Image (cartoon, rainbow, N blue to C red):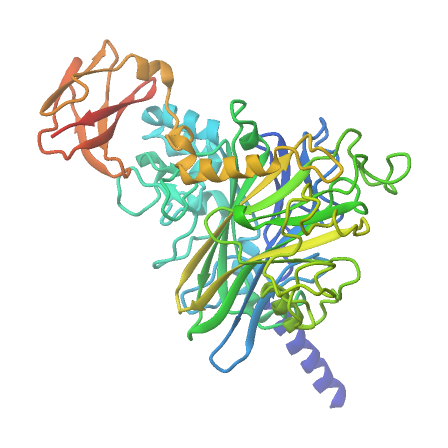
Length: 560
């Protein structure tokens, strides 16, 4: 009898264990420019779980010295009962994670099947979007051919995608769940690529855009009851949608040496939370892991790392088998683009940095040492006569009278750093977003000189603030076709003649400056079409012309 009960207990235990989510496995390389960056889906980044995988200028095998060993998302806050809610990712070993693949239902739950189904990344390249839009007039009535030629676009997990299940074998969530962002050509709220919709990067308060390469995935901190093996705390619950992208723009080298990430956090809590922080933790390894310095640029909302001298590694330019930079090692920065960097802290030599309790993680998020002591200006930040401060090593290393690892002559070491933003109160259903630029800055004036690092960071911020100067925000169209289109007059006040010569035009779509489709014209006459814009407001409009050879676009200015 006892043996039967034991077997029953073991069966029930195994059944219960099988119903929780397991450690996510999916990994993918984002390599849209000079950087090859490994993207994972458990809150961590830039590692293949055995070595750093943020590689500037990789060789033909995708290998080379990395500037980051790993990075991770941290979230912390206090619930109404005073309990800590925390997710913190550092090194994911075996099952040590606080995040699991997949979205959450509106009630904040998930299940093992959904976690398994969503243990994947979705990747789209800008030239694929361009080719798809050019081919769209011929593909619109042939979905099977479209799925075969453009599976990543046809299978993009945009809300309501009618082709998703055919390509991936499982259904999209129903209801109001918003997943991967897309340009909604017909403004009906549903992703249908054969109606002109296509994947984009969509950031809060920004126009959607197509990058040279973009990756999307979704994860959560519930895991259908799986225990948190990372920070060892209780999650919120929260769903996190990660978009990572890159631009390859030779005219702007700083763009070609930057990878962007955006974490969209959807809090599925049922109660208000207080004193909430979101943080980015980074183990900076500039080639060799043992000879790095770190610092903060508070005015630029940036944390960064640099080599402690002009030679990477130890004697003989080696690092116990780790790839090193044979020439001058670069600087690596992580910059908060859409939020203030409110705190920063690092594992300075001689300061206590043992993180073995949930509150130790939360103390770091709050800009304190793990034991709760405030960060102090000067020295190692723990033993100092200086006042409490929000940022560690907050002065330019080239400033002999400032506070940096150079001026206090810290020992070179393996450095980890955390930058955080204070959210404050979080309400049920609240959505937060953190966009970070991960930039490599070559040719620093080592030791202690950062070269053009600060100017480059300011340039990236300016590019972001100005919506990437518009050039990378426009949907890709065939330039040769567009050159064949004429608009007379332009600017226009009432009638504008759209000339397309001998080009057979199937449809004209008119979009306002916000990307909304405001008019569609079909059954067009040959050569030209007279468009009445007398009822339009002053502004810049985009006219798309669908032809059998592809899609053309021209901008029209309307004046009142």
